[in-house]
Length: 230
Image 1 (cartoon, rainbow, N blue to C red):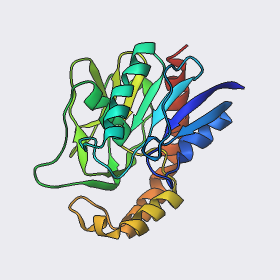
Image 2: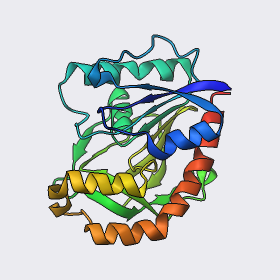
Image 3: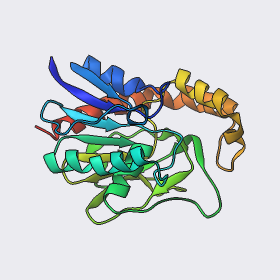
């Protein structure tokens, strides 16, 4: 068995979804921790193959002590050069750790549903990228020194970034299955009324069209990502 992957979640009901299933198929055990519920993060990652920090309904700018502590903790995988992947909130916490700004759009537009992304030249080796990916966010992050853009979007520019050799951030949600997408829509229907949020019927149509490509991309991306720590 390969060394475990550390998966950081932010609510009791949160699931690592497709990322967890793929990592297990690839031979990794999972070490799941939830800092808001009192789980401590390790002092070293010598025993882990990588770290994935997932999303949540909170903002990266919130003043909660656990959130600041988690943001500060990200310096550990950066320093030890352990593969790090931030997804949505996780990517925004990485950006905050690196000194970048996290904020919403001035016009209040969000991204919820399947929206297109385009790979940059730097992102080409991590493809083939899906045409559309699943989003659920109202804030995005800016780039700072050392960040390399891998994929861009029309309304939130930075959709995928790399920092150094081993740290990556994704603004979108490749881990989300149809079941999770449905649960999110049912638990927060008011958010589907925001500008930029797709109707649930359109999300289902887009999911049927683009989900398989997203899952295939994620599997290949995780292989490439995990290998950066070798």
